Amino acid sequence: MKLIRLTYTKWYNILRNGLSQENPIAIAVLGICSALAVSNKVENALAMGFGVTFVIMASSLTVSAIRRFIPQRVRMITYMVIISTFVILVQQFLQAYFPSIAAALGAYVGLIITNCIVMGRSEAFAVKNPVKYSLLDGFANGLGYTYVLVVVAVIRELLAFGTLLNIQVLPTSFETWTSMAMAPGGFFILGILIWIIRELTHNYEMQEG
Image (cartoon, rainbow, N blue to C red; front, top):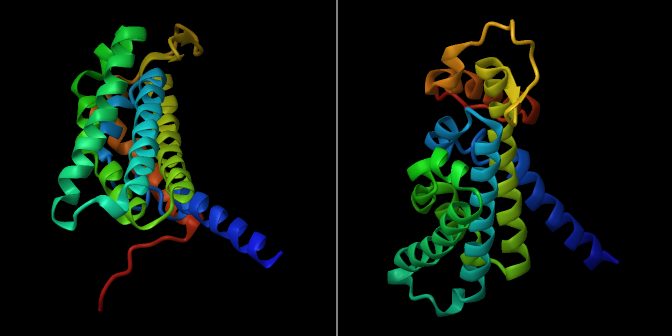
């Protein structure tokens, strides 16, 4: 019974950390560039979020499974090879089945390779933990990244285009905010969302002195 309770606590803590306490965007402030670039429409945010989640989970699983065979001196190169393989799969999938979204995301899909969230989870967690926990950690961090992207995208798409998933929601008479379609608008919304999440999780930057 005690072992089951400890396992449950471990799983709960991993999920909580990825979604809120150590959210990759709101708390760790990682992946900001892609968050600003692709969150102008909900479909783009979903595609990028699911792509990043898949890459984190698949790369974390792989790194965890072979962690005892990865030489310490070449571990970063090994991570890059593993991550780039799964990024190529995501890129090919989007180009084959969702060409319009792939075109809208452009180079940002390929740049998942350099996303600090993916590399960070491999180095900070997957290489030190069993497969089951690494897979859950990848899912939690990917979902934490995705929901922040989607919330920002919902607000931006509504204000910039009056639509959600390209479906007209606001009246055609609504005066759209052009700034919300651009990166500065995304930065403003993202900043407010980060503040809200940090307030809710009581995660503040401590000032020295």
